[in-house]
Length: 320
View 1 (cartoon, rainbow, N blue to C red):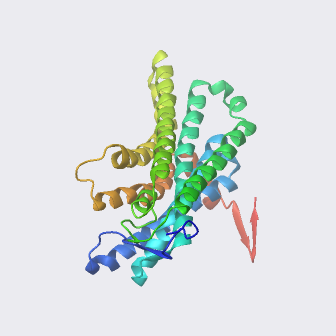
View 2: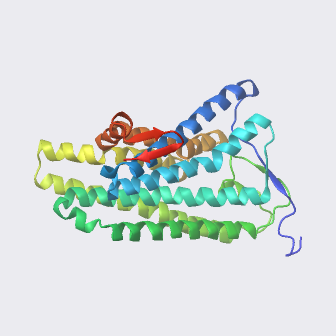
């Protein structure tokens, strides 16, 4: 194959999930319900934060970004999976596959970064409550969020361009339900050393450093609480950090189990199931975790829907 013809195939075939044909219809309904729940739940969080002025704080600014990232992260893979299950056509064009990989990497990275920023926000709120407003200023929040979105775009683009330089000339069946970067590399018939090296370096840096920063934030929180232990301070930590800790455990638990604790029985079934956990289940559960455990969200729901904060007057919607 010459250098000008980078790929000899025009499409890939997504193997999908290992579901028996007799259960396809049932799982289609289940996944559709999960995806709709993810979209509606995260949209509700975003709309509440936009409409309710009581939620215009750094914590909820980060939460709205997390909900947007969750919504997009799930939307990268689920519509195509549902389409394939309905049409029984597993094909995806080459360009669409690379596009899906790009956005999957970008929003997956952003999820990790936002969990770090939210951990820092909780650290400042608990350890420096009197200086919280001055430290977590709108300028600092923008300085945290904008570079992170740019970094995720750069990181995803780097891997996408490295993937685009590879040749695919033999097997085009992806052993996954989406265009996973590692599954794609296994199909390449050209040298993938640079790709694998950059995946190892960048993924290790992003995942490990993000996780360590979260652990450090909570270590400082615990150390601060232990200096003046009281039932009230412990309750404050749980009420303030409980939701965030639950999301961290869900997101990193599945990633660590899949990529950092490989087993001898690391089968396709296990990989796709674990990937389904952090690409579909976690984004679906996040709105419930924050709404059920968060008093501010519950009060915002009451203010917006029960106290008639939104008035419908014909075709117009008036916000008061």
